[in-house]
Amino acid sequence: MKYNIKYKLWLEKDGEVVMGLGRDQLLREIQREGSISKAAKKVGMSYKKAWSFIKTMEDRLQVKLIETKRGGKGGGGAVLTDEAKNLLKEFEEISNRFEKLTQKLSKNG
Image 1 (cartoon, one colour):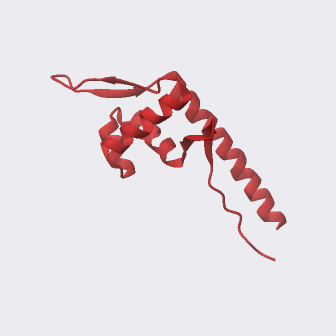
Image 2 (tube, rainbow, N blue to C red):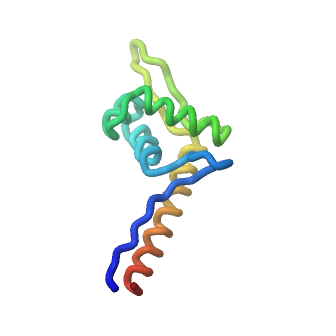
Image 3 (spheres, rainbow, N blue to C red):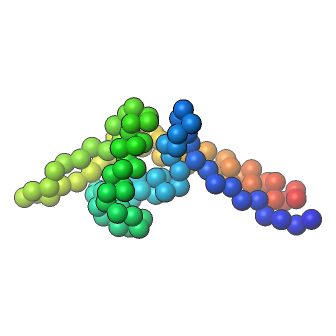
C-alpha cells in the first residue's frame, strides 16, 4: 500500500507548548529583520500575537529570548539572545531528524 507520512512537530515543557513551526518562523524573522513588528508582518500575525508568543515562550522556558531596544531617534530593534539561538538550533536539528526518518519510512512503505 502506498502512502505518505506526515507529522506536526512541537516542543513542550511541563505539558505546555514552547516551540513549534510558527514560533520557529517568528524567531527566525526577528533574527533577520531585527524587529518584532516587521517579523510579525512577514509571518502573517499581529504584533500583539507575536509578543504573546515570545512572552509565553520566555515564561515557560524561564529564559529571556529577545533583547529589545526602544524606538526613538535611532529607532528600536530586537535581537535574539543566545538562549533563543540555541533553541532554534535544537528545533532545527530535531526537525531534520524527523524529516530523515519520514523519508526513510516512506521508502519502506
